[in-house]
Length: 380
Image (cartoon, rainbow, N blue to C red; front, side, top):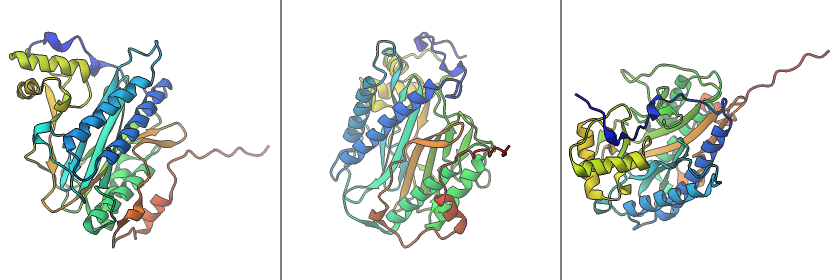
């Protein structure tokens, strides 16, 4: 029997009513402020990710940067008690590793010249989160071959997907262009990846866009509408695009809001108290915990009782490469805007034998982001 946990602190995030920035325009200001910090954190991560850099160290420095930057925004006395912080811990996933690699110090690795890396991070204010991810290659040299193929495939798929998001268009239209674009570069969209509609204290809403629809992997179709905020996540692989769990320790988790239990071990209780205080609703890395040993023990007991949602490290086959781009997109009453994750890629650095040949895809890329057409008034 599941019992109430006195360490829950009365938190009830899962039951709150979701309001949009249409209902309260100030909400959009929080998303945009978080987006600016997420984008700047991505830039910092890319600067730090040089040959020989330690992945755990870089991830910690980026997380520390976010924690410091959020203190500088909404800093008035009126807003000083607003919740703020990391919305997704920095992860740096290398070559065939698809995502969620955010190692603890003793299990870290060093980056090497030519490594293809995916970097993700995010910030939030008042539970309104903006996440962003980019892909680059360590070092300054020109990039060709399959690394260039997959990065250009993912970037173009990301750009095309953005242009399919607008009032009354559907998630299915977004999914369609992602796989088609990947195929232009002899690559595949990764299976099982979902882009979610997000809200306050909610990074994984029920309305989703699937990265690649096939067979049993289908999702319900729905239309975008003003007020929607989408965490658009595009993954492309040079391989089959079938994720498998890697041997690396899972370090990224999110609290399962609907599950409570009286934890038995003192160290597990201390860990969960810290989670409730610092990361009550959004993903975190155990790197951030004050007591790493207690965190390892606490994670184990919490997982045994379904109190945490794990984000396991996933990988593609050895020798393949995976690229990711992620942005936070808002559907406004008259237009779509990409508020995080859309810093232009220096495509001149990447040389591929492939390019976009399909005329329909070319037309999608040539479009602007969605804007509502103005209704022409009849002449009197």
